[in-house]
Amino acid sequence: MPELPEVETIRRSLEDVQGAGITDLQINRAEVIRRQEYEPESVVGQIIREVRRRGKFLVLKLKTEKYLILHMGMSGRFYLTGEDEELTEPHIHVIIHLDNGRKIVYQDARRFGGVWFIRDCQKFFEKMGPEPLTREFNPDYMEKAFKGRKAPVKNLILDQHLVAGIGNIYADESLFAAGIRPDRMAGTLTADEIKKLCQAIKKVLRTSIEQRGTTFRDYRDGYNRKGGFQDYLKVYGKKNSPCPLCGNPLIVTRIGGRSSHFCETCQK
Ligand SMILES: [Zn+2]
Image (cartoon, rainbow, N blue to C red; front, side, top):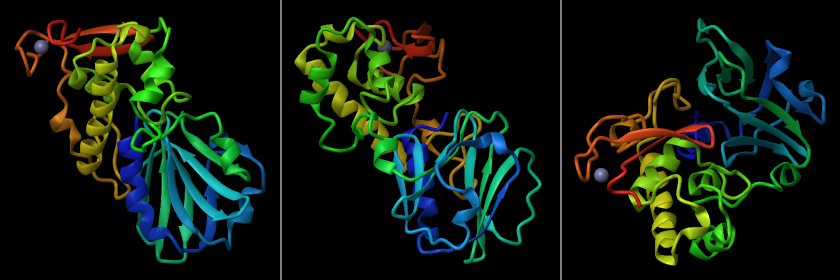
């Protein structure tokens, strides 16, 4: 599933469309519309003022009270292509035609993602936790959020209400980098461990953004190219491979319904 670094990479590649006008909106499958607070057709003639990201969502700001919000779900792709480019892939649900000779394509075989036509962007995201790469997300904040919690620490860092944009890949990688088991009760983390985890999350996400995200199966960036962070993964998807620190085989267990990769020796 695309997580923060993948969505941020797509956002950066879509920056080119800022200032472009929408000439047509083609919706091939109505089910991908998750909510419509205004007529989808009314985006035609509007200018894309800004391309933002919040958590795992992309936000196209058209004007005040008109936002087009996009989510890739498990396997969706959003990419830019030339207006004349023929689209041969199956499962193309939405095409946003632009006046700069390009189009934004939303393709998704599994349709867990979707499109929201929203008036109040702030309200849409009001329950979402802070962005992990901002100062708002810091050890003090985490300490308060973890205090007294019996849930596994991994569940908490996956909780979008607590922190935005982290999914299974970056949770496992950050916990490994911090030397903390994913099933540790969150409330038992020491101040030092929380600080390490906070730093690890920021570092792992920044490095992945530099590498334009992780392509495990489906993810492609805004130009339909693969990411590069899969070559930097230390534990995710590496069951039975030697731990890069101690050489013991990495294990995988299910925590909160998600497969979790870690080293029993290096992570406490
Ligand atoms: Zn190890």
